[in-house]
Image (cartoon, rainbow, N blue to C red):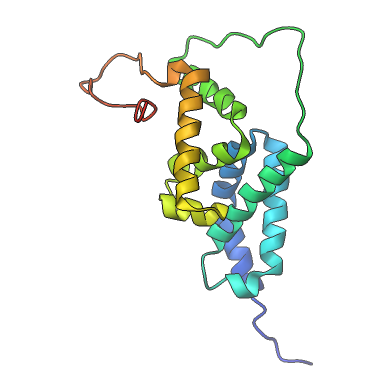
Length: 182
């Protein structure tokens, strides 16, 4: 019987169990489709498993996020399609927070994949410009320009996001973040 060596399986399984939900949420925000997000995450975790020996001592979550964003852009380029419909989508309900969430989701869907990835990394994952550039494999200047262009586009397609019309709770001067650098 051969002695049992440390193949890293336990560490990999522990990583997947502790990070899969956050990574799945990020994948969903990037692609906007639950099934595609699950597929992207599964492929990314498979790629991580194949490289676990060299990645486990670094930052495996950053490695997986980079795979998610790059594969999402690649998938979008291969399957670029337009979805036509006979009728416009249903109107949003009166729930203001729900309406803003739906508006943001729809507006993110109108952005190119790289701009969407930059916004998700910067504002959802709360990464710095440098960390975002590393995750996407681009320069910091590219992150800045893509972020600026994405925020400008969001203001165009979803002006409701640029101003908060909810009743003030003693914070009249709070910015939503979309009105910065108009």
